[in-house]
Image (cartoon, rainbow over all chains, first blue to last red):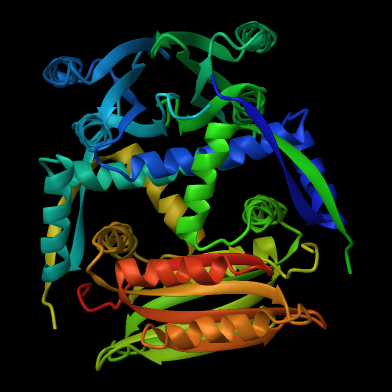
Length: 139
Length: 139
Length: 139
Length: 139
């Protein structure tokens, strides 16, 4: 486990005041936590820039389950990518619409590619990828 | 169910050629599908711009489950927001790191706010929101 | 002029190490400056979320100057928006292509609207807005 | 000059109706133009993904000109990058604050790097890059 260290940030007082208001609104109770989040967010961005990096991502697809063979197509893609797909959760949004969230893990380039395949499947109303992390390198 | 209509797009041939290459790489088999996705993506962006709009979003948090009381704090927030949280899925990334994906639904402003609260919780290593849709208005 | 103050950030050592590498790559010579930039970036984002806020933005349009009446149309829009447009710079990219950068200042909602009008003008090959600040509230 | 061709897009009527409302709000007079813009935007994104690609970008920096030697430092960086910097425009925002917009052209990786150097210069209050295009490959 990493050790906590401390460093000082010098900053104009007005700027700090505005930052305190902003992070208060976002629910932070603590400046260090807000700063760490800004830092970690940039680092995760960086992890995804390296094609070989082990990353975690989610794919969110909304679709109409009555659409002929879409559910089946999505399932097939998932099976072909089973080494990347860790888990999936399915939500019935209403009588027609479904949401499926797939959690993927693997090399950045592979996860990105599989995500594109899933979100670009014909009949998917809206597909989105989220880029996150294994957490391993972020203490 | 919506009816399919057709409209024509006039476009320079070179531009179309480049578009065809791009969508091929992304896994589209069909121009109409790629165009519909570009359109739907803009519409979902627009739904989130309206604070009162019924939307769906996911929140993805990565954290170390050994972190004192973090899991409990996240659970408490989720309970206070239980009317917004439709479902949650939990993945053990390794011995230390967990991924939790929460699926939320409600007014855009409320979902956004709850998401900020969750991602800004002290100890969360990386938190991300995904903005998607109920699919109701996207045929 | 604002006074410089100092606050401490506690952070795991591994995380700080990775941050130092990252900011070194981006050309920062100093952690405080990198942190201040992360903070100011969020604050500027926030300024643009307030429709009435006095902001600065740029609009960048690339177009073919041989396109019938496009240059004239862009000029007309600019004149109608002259209270928002501070300055414009024009670059001849090659025999056919021009780049025009317009610097705008006004209420966030007005600047955004004028920017959309300019980038959506028929014949503009690529239009982009940049969201920046008057600097007044960022010391 | 490229030839105009036409292709058909099949789309649910409801979706098309919503798209028409959206593009009307953004000031488009014409569906084809809106679609071409969506397409070109993706292609420009793609150009920037290729480190060797000839691109155009702008860098926008806001700073206080009274800040000791900042203006001079920015000028020095610009001179070192003179082969990339096509043009610069300077605006006096108020008694203290300046906006400088630099128009750059070169290989994507070089332009990106120079932009980072400029926006990360100590004393710059807010720096932003805009990613656009030479227009050459976008008819």
